[in-house]
Picture 1: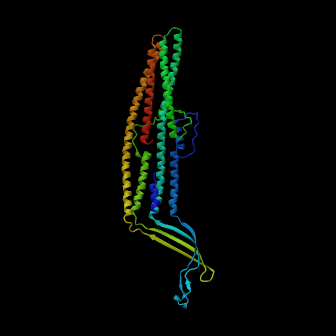
Picture 2: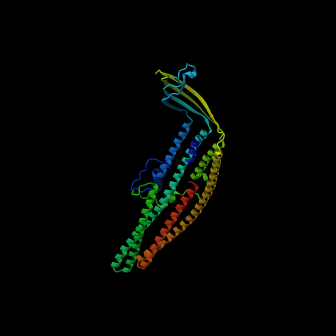
Picture 3: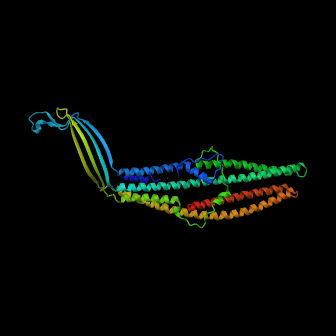
Length: 441
């Protein structure tokens, strides 16, 4: 019975195994859809679900130990040499002929019914199995949260690259249009070839940067597919953009208080402590008896007594009660109890460490959120200024009072400001996500 409990306690270890979520190859997908796909397809979730099923069957296995146990058996014996003594030894004359004490043939079917009436180990094992089921369920919640965080962390960099590509495409389009106009103006003799060369160089630089960024996007998106449990060869297009996701995190409360129980990892640790406490309680009462009852019926047949060949029906039935009380096991139970106490103390130390880690994570997330908010405001102001400079420079250039050098410089400043704002918005989004993670939301 102790082994049943120990199996329950030691197996404590790890979000829903559902129907596969189809994603259309060409249709762009949002972050929420990627998360749901991962929950339905990532192998970690399938393993977690299998552990829950195993815990359910473990409860049934432990419960069955205390239910009536019915068994049947049959045995046959043939005595090659039967035990016996001379007849003269029993006062039957002086004959040396042996009197056999058993039949030559012995056929013994039996049916037994056993019932455990009381066992502290059994009762504790039942409770431990239920606690283990709760623990595994909590581990599933932890696995779900971890996978959501992993998908989110993989989705955001891919989204940032996609946003950069959009900005690059827009700037490339603007430069191509300007290059066509400048080429036509140069052909008419109203502009220098130097202006065309400068625009071609700037356009070539942007196209090269776009090609490099596109390859980086493929690498990052493949990492996202791996996290989701999606085949790498399947196409995946992102539907969200930074402003949309930022708008979805408007409920982020920087003043919210940290509640440890909102973190599934913390709750899972508490469940593990309950399991360790059960083990400690078990070894605290080693003197408690185990009581069992049994009933057995044997419809036996024996044949070939002495010189006859007749079979005799010799049935028997027995009922009984057994009580087992441990007295001394050489100190093994005490050693197990001390180890169980150490296990509980270890969990308490881990609990303190986890609380400190959560507090630090929360404080860092708050500061990161404040810094990212201020940086986004500053980057937006810089972009507005760079846009005004570019518009003015472009107007002057088209009017023939500005140089192509000024226009290219203004375009580069505008592109840098656009990238800086996107990076700031990405940092703000990451800070909001980190704060919600820290709060357990």
